[in-house]
Image (cartoon, rainbow, N blue to C red; front, side, top):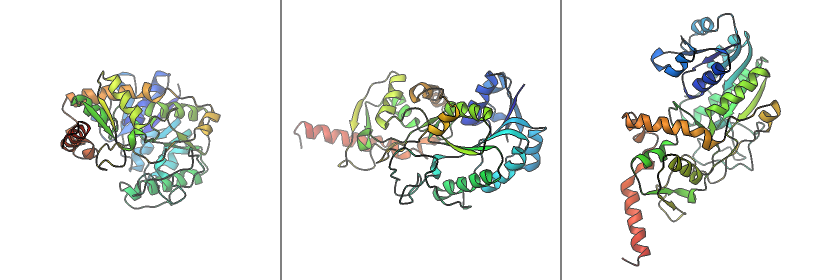
Length: 347
């Protein structure tokens, strides 16, 4: 039986890789620091949990044991992390390191987390320039991409069969920052209107964890040292994503498409980009990759999970952190009331 080991395998990417490989007959192990975070469905499917801290070399080596046919690192954020990965990769037939689309910069050096949003000339190829490698706090806006680049270079310079995978706006069950929540919550709150900045035309291509898993399976069969983008086969706009969510949940609302005259605090979503951000997938396709499905098909499991989690009372923390600007209902209602008065010719 072929064996796969996923470091940090209890998160959205790792759990989907483990689930799909296990269903295909692989022996799959996942590591984590807390067995309580092991998804029950993985354990029921025969996936084994191994307690191991990602920063502990001894625990990582013990988890790998005599080796693996496929090694997947879902939580490699820094050059130091990558250096710990190399001894493991020497005993794996093929290794996938999950990086990020956030490493790319446009012709002016702007990136996904810069103050000025990037403007790319077209679909982003793997040869697109990246941020300079760095070792500042990887959990900061400037540090995330820079540290990912540093990790990539350590891995690629080793000459080992390590494939760097660069996804974009990952969605899936168990996501720590599920972007679709901006629309799911509105449905649960029975909002009668959805406000969308830039007339809902913003496009930042998403990536289903299931499609990352499909690419990883391809990498397992074709070991090599390379970089591969990974994104869904379609690139829906913010408006189209809002419709996917509302349609799946059976909710209807008025679509209010805001232009530049509206307050810039209204209609914000994670897909607000003045220029499309789309990944070129030709390199992965040439390797034999075929996606598991498009955005609408793949996101439904996450939507259902969000609804179940919200009804269990577990999402209040999200409103006050990542998405606080998206739920200013009082300001929205004031704007909508003023607009209706204007349309009716009232002062």
